[in-house]
View 1 (tube, helix red, strand yellow):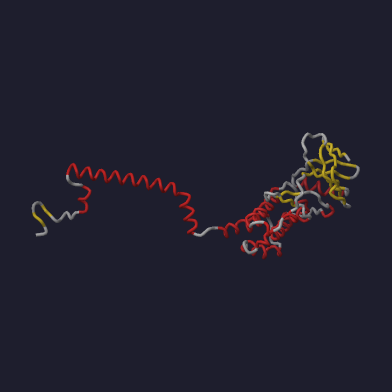
View 2: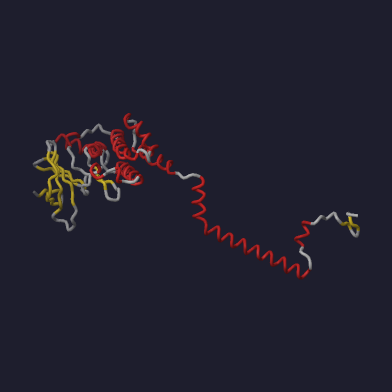
Length: 277
């Protein structure tokens, strides 16, 4: 079936699912030269469609495209390869560093996603989180919009994200004891208000655990600056060699080195009389 949205003629190549509130399919623009895919959502419930539009307008955000349709209201979203985090993340197969990277990327994606919080909550709640092979995070839009709630805010999304992050780091509890124990106390109480607070608990505590001791930092400093120290040593050796050469020349020419006079007792002789007599 072909759906017309603006200048785009979208051919639905695969249906994701159907429910009472909406239909979701993967489409391509038959007029485009590229093979770009889109997620096309047909909202069948006009009340839900109105709530979604009002949420976007309230936060000053925009859809890729929208259009009325006899079957409902069409909304076009981006499409990313479906590689669900819940299916591809196996904690025992990932290193602690990869685990931390996934958590941080998820939090950052939540913060920079240009979508209203009610929609973000559905994405987090309905397992529409895709994990890239490089540990990157993308969001999918194959959603059941019947649960769309305009009262959802950042706090609700932050606590939902915190629960997912906690589930990710749980297999690494021993190696990430500090962040794990901190979130273990906070997640059940739903105390997170902003995504930045989750980022702090994951990133900052991990950096504190990984901070090397004084000896390791000293070795690392020496390792980074060994070339500079060697150059300074060569310069000092050159200066010392010049000083020694000048002292030898002075000895040969005048039979005395004035520098050594500094170490003599100037009160041993006064005029022609010796003080030692």
